[in-house]
Image (cartoon, rainbow over all chains, first blue to last red; front, side, top):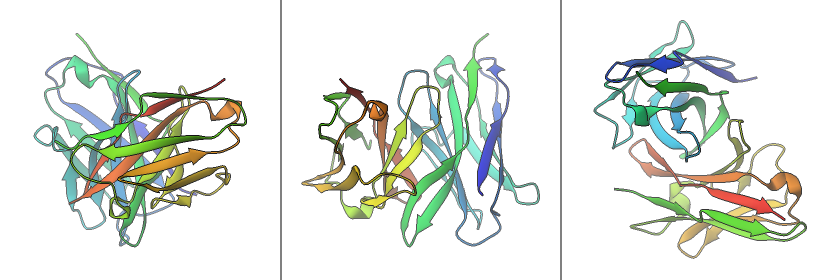
Length: 122
Length: 110
């Protein structure tokens, strides 16, 4: 059974760097084809795809946020870390990690973690 | 700037049929975008309904179907039930490792 769980600070000051950790089980990011993604959702708003890391350490970022995001993995700990620099109150959101399921070239997000709410405020 | 468009809101009567769509501002949606659909109820993480345009995720009833409708991806719900009242999001794969979500559709069943 694949499970993922996000962790990180509930409150971050503006201009600081946000660090979120996704701890997963049921698969290994050292196995070919495995990928993990981060997605966020501001309160009452839509989902926004943020970043993805692949088993071969390929990394991909949202065009609009790429200068502020960094994604990394620790395969020994089954963790993926997302950092976001220079946060602003508009970055207040529930942050989800999800496994990127795949079949051939097709990808989708399943399952998802429960999400962690991050508030950016002074 | 890639924008994925969805109807902001839709209403359907219990037992009725509704079709939600997922479009692109600058191109047609095709199977090569591998459209996927997610259902989200308040306070919960999204749940996968459909992937690869038309494949139902495990446990999803056949009342939900996905397909390409003209230049958009579509999700049809037949025999709508009260517990279908949710937010529905589509996601498209744009290539180069990039995915984009639509703005979501709030479905009301009444």
